Structure formats: structure tokens, C-alpha cells
Image (cartoon, rainbow, N blue to C red; front, side):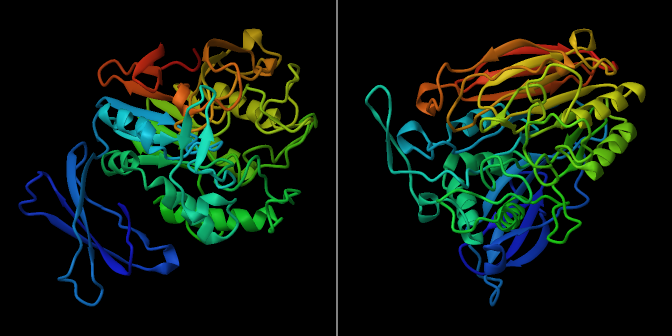
Length: 463
């Protein structure tokens, strides 16, 4: 459980099987103060599996615990022990390219739409904020109308200080749709580039006049602390052993492998090197992923990757930001690491792997098959891309043929930075049937229209 106060306070959580809170269970949390931007978390242990839990969070005066604020209430479902159906939504990219909270547009209304679908959880595939994307009060739209942003001081410039990064997270929580969503839907969160700045990598030195701090490692440290304060990720501790990547177990049907394609990557480059042990994941994370995939006994292994695999995402004129680099031949650069992983999945006969991602600000479905690929030693698999939640939309990028992708569906605008007022805001839904184990992916556009559906059979190494 996570909360933010507006002053020093003690966090208290009460849980109950019913809304009446007759015989609630009480959990005493931490003191909230300026050291964590008045945020805090409390871990709840021993809740009944596969159950609806009602909760309320109280903030108490540290000097007089009898004095409390109004409780914040909500509900969530705990992870099942038995083979029960699972349904979750995913997307990414919030408040980017100058499109913030617009009350005339209904704010971040995608979150209310997703909440009404009553998912078991939400997977956010990165770019929870746009720390490098200042907002202006108004933006002229192509039809002559005006987009109006709610403004805060921290959103008027690029984030450099710890408090400016914190302010970007505080900004999003001004939206009542997002607050209501978080009160009812658990979130599995990962980060990508805009939690720090566009296309960043460790060791980068900026040549951007907007920044007085040019060392990206300094900026990333501030961003990491703010990210850890605003999302209760159990593995993300402040010491060097803390990490974003982890596996979230959701009963016998589903494991979610949450990757971090930022912290351990090598520098963006043309991506043509014949050896690359660091790649986009780093050697340690790759070893962890191979080991955990081999250990998993879940029917489905969803690999949540904040960057797409076969989509060519450029960084400037000659460098590349993701895995693919436009050369359809044998793996080079970061593709070598992906080839090693895919080879491992095939040779270890790991079944039920599906890749979910965001980042490119449109939605698509790609099937990868060795019969079409330059690299042959892997089993077929699917990758589904969606987003943005509330940000500019962009045209589709090219596919790289190294791993044989074939695009069965894509929806994207024909020009750059299309505003949320014009549509092209997307999310995905994954549903696993408790009886058959069949996994169905749906790609949706805000408004509730299902654009594309794909059903996958369980127990297969590749399909």
C-alpha cells in the first residue's frame, strides 16, 4: 500500500473482507516526512489468497494518534493460489510531448476507462512521467481549438533536482481519474527513458542547453530515488543491490517478468558491433532472466519489456535506441543478447512466452518466426505493442528482419505528435481463461473499441 501526505504523519492501513469494516485488521506503517517527499508504504502480509480485500488508509498526527485525516478507501483482489482466470491491462507513456492534464478533455480519462474493465492489475510499460517534457498553459490544435494544461512549477522546465523529479510524479496524481484507478487497481510498474530524459544511457554527458547538470548519471540518481518513492517496488532499495527488474508471480497461470532496459545498457550506437555482452539488459540481468524463465512453472510467462524488439527506433541520424538497428542480417550489437535469450528459451523448451511493450506511441502486433529470419535458432513468438496513455502519437517505424517479424496489425497516425484530442491513445488487455488456459490479447483504443484480438494456446514453446 502506498500513500502521500501533505505534512508529517503516521501511515495506518486497515483491511476488511467487507465494506462495513466490522472487525478490521490494522497495520501500522511508517512516519511520513520530507525525506521521502511525504510518501510511504506498508506491506500487507497474510491476506487470504484469491479474495476481494477492502482497505482504508489513515494518516495520523505523530504527536496525537487520535487525530487523523479522512480515510482513503479502496479495494483490490489478492493473487489466487488455484488455477483461476486472470485479466490485466497494460500501456505506457503519460503526459508526453506537451500534452498534460486537460480538464476540458476530461483529464487522463483512459484510466477511468481501464478501471471500469475491472482488471486484476495494470502493467505500466514505462514513461510514467516525462521529466524532460515541460508543459505550457495552452497549445494550439490543428482544428484551431486550444488544448489547456493544468500547470505546476515543476512542469514548467526540465527536471534536474530531486524535487523537480518528484514534482513530475506529483503532477500526474492531480488527475482524479488516475487517483481513482490507483485506489482500485494494483500496478506493476517499470521505467524507461522519460523518467530521466529522452533516450538516456549510463555515462552519457548532455549537450542540451536546457540542462545546467550535464551528467546523466547524476540526473538518473535523482530520478531513481523519486521513482522509488512514488512506486512501492519491493526490489528497488536505495543501496546498490536495489533493482527495477523482477518477476511478479500471479498464481499458477501467470508470471510477469519485468525488465529494465535502461540501467544496464551500453551507449546508443549504430549497433553493428560483432560482440556485445552488455547489450540493452546487461550481463547480470540477462543471466537472471534466463534462470527465472527456466524456473517458472506458470502456464504463461509474460515478458514486460519497456522497449520493442524488432521495431527500428532511431536515436539521432546514426544511432539506435532499442534492440533493432535496421540491418536485416545476422544479429549484431544489442541483437546478440536477444539472440542468446531466444536460443535459451528454445533449447530449454520454455513454453508460453509472450512479449508486451510500449514506447513507440502507437499499437501493433508482431509475430516472429525463424522461417522468415536471418537468425534461425529460436522458437516463434508474439510481441504486442501499445500506448500512449496521454501523450503525442507517432507514425509506425520500420521492422528489422533479423528475427523475422511479420506485422499482423498496426494502427498509427500519419504525422508526428498527434494530440490526445484527436485520438490514437491505446492500451491492451490480456485475459487468461482459468479452465482452458488460453491467453487472449486485445488491443484497444480509448473509447473502448477493440481494434485487434489474438488468442494463443497454452503449453507451446513457440506459436
